[in-house]
Image (tube, rainbow, N blue to C red; front, side, top):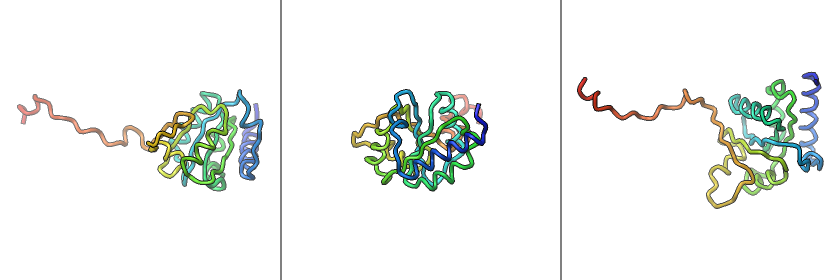
Amino acid sequence: MNSPVDQIKRAMNALAYADSGERTVAVSASPSRKWIALGVGDSLPAPVMSYVIGACRRMRADLLLLSVDTTRVRALLEAYLPDLEGVDCQSEELASASTASVLRALNLHRGLLFAVSGTDDDPLRPLLRNRRGSRTPVPVVLVSEKSPAERPAPPVAPRASDEHTQ
């Protein structure tokens, strides 16, 4: 088993290669490698990262981080490196946050299981609103920062028995 330091070095090396614009054929073309894509905007909320890291572990998948600014990704990811031990990360810098650019990036990676959108400003969010018929190559999961307990409860209609007790 690799030490946490080795895992952090491996994750940072993966990000460094991705930031330099190099594509590794073995990484994207390996049929046995599985990926979960995560759209990264201005933040990486803890509930979103907890979901993604858990999914990567359960499915034995690596993490593909899609963003228009990979420098920001590196800074945001730093807090989660201990939790990402054993999960290989690759950062993909998009030309823009357009649907076409995101779909191009998703189509480049074989073995992509699904994608996760967790913030309003991440590049995968437009795929959830897309109604023009563009099909995504994988399902896109929306992970909310709020837990079900924090969401407002739906209104409850009064029961007939409540009218008589007033």
